[in-house]
Length: 83
Image (cartoon, rainbow, N blue to C red):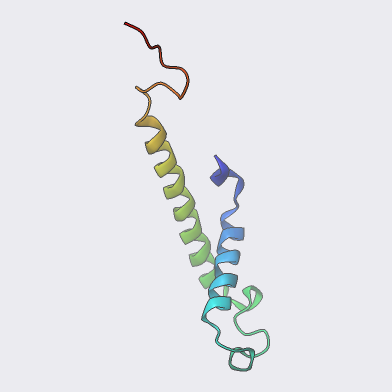
């Protein structure tokens, strides 16, 4: 699944980027470079990456659960119809 292709570090960085973009009202209030990924303390980065890992695991679990719930049903076009 696609979740295997996403690095938790990259997901955390992107989440932080978009969170900052959506919460910053104006460039004047945000300050130059305030809140950039490079300025986040290592402990906070680690926490965000751990959260991203958990999100990816949960998405993988949800996808697996939904695919296993359909194991007794034929795929579209594969059902045998007839009396």
